[in-house]
Length: 382
Image (cartoon, rainbow, N blue to C red; front, top):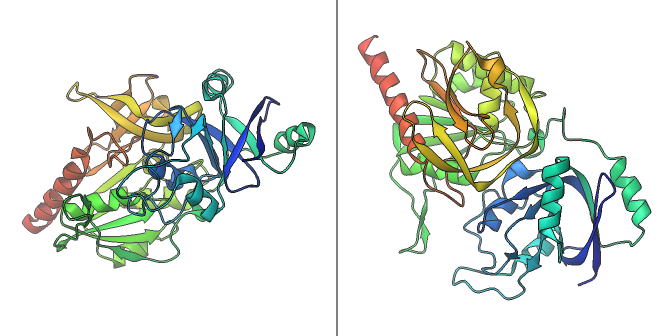
């Protein structure tokens, strides 16, 4: 390991040692509060352009396997930990975390006082940072990160979406068979998933519920989606600012106006909110972790949820346009919406539990039930 520096946009310096790939990278630094699931975090496309600091102190102790990825490769720009475990133990593991990061060119820094870093971000807000194992010239690093651009106003989806449509058939992991399930598919239940940076576990849930799933690129037009003859449309999670995604806003508005069943998660919720006349804004330090309490306003039930976003829909801007269905109990931000008299709803959190928790997986059943009811209404001529 070699000496490595993490330098924040405001000039604050943290010293540590390198692991994974050596190099120099700039990104917005955020923190994640989950205790496990670093594979899912590293490969989540919603983190594109960001470096992630883990609040749990020991990272890497169960290594890396190829089954728990949320996309084909890591998406984070750098990984920041208190203590990297060189020793790993898991019957599914094929390599260490450090080897995995080195293979894909992800720069890592260990030995950082992550409690101090997280307190700083919570007080000052998310900001850009630079991680470098290439120089000890702190002034150079401070000047370089100070000149870097914010993720606000940028379309990051273009870097993570698929290049062409494809069919997804893989179900959830079966621990008894040590392999994925490949359930029977019902051609009469066709879900088109718009890929703004989709997590694979979302697709697995649809397949487990018997749906035929077609994934399409982010800029797919409404007319091209209609040609696929979908029974329902899913608007996925993804990275960055929702405001520049004009093509996504237009698609969502057309889907709602034409009474298609629509389900959105995370960025999909923000896109739908904007399409319905709402506004979004950047949170001070975002929601990233697996322990966020969300209240369902219709039932009073509180769910512990996984979240990963830096932007939120403005509650004030949505009044009179949609029904607010869920709120975050930490800061009262919007966590769910639905459209009156239309088969359309979305949530800001991640019900697919990759890596957990499992409280909100019922939302997939809710959406597919909505799709089936819509099919029956069409048959009945309602």
